[in-house]
Length: 128
Picture 1: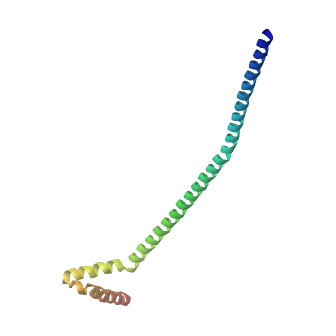
Picture 2 (picture 1 turned 120 degrees about the vertical axis):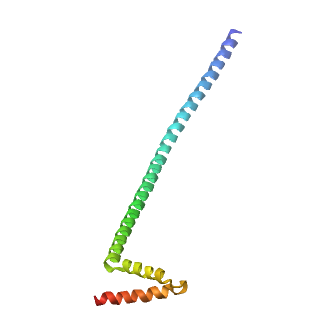
């Protein structure tokens, strides 16, 4: 009977060892999976960083191009304003519109009157 008890105890011990071995294997497998997952995540993080870097560079380029366009528009606006000032067109339009209001030119003849009067002012300026 004692031998049977010893055999049963040995069997139980072996079962427990097997259970412990299986637990250890699962832990090892879990650790390996975690390690594999960790190494798998690293390239994704790098890719995300590269994607973010690419997006940032694209945004910086877009901002730079927009700034250049804005600067170009400002330069052109200044050149146009200088042209208007040098040519006297602004003053001519002011004179013509004042005449249109003073004379009460009908709405359907405003364009014709303005064009004719601007031509006349141009000739007057060329003679001077």
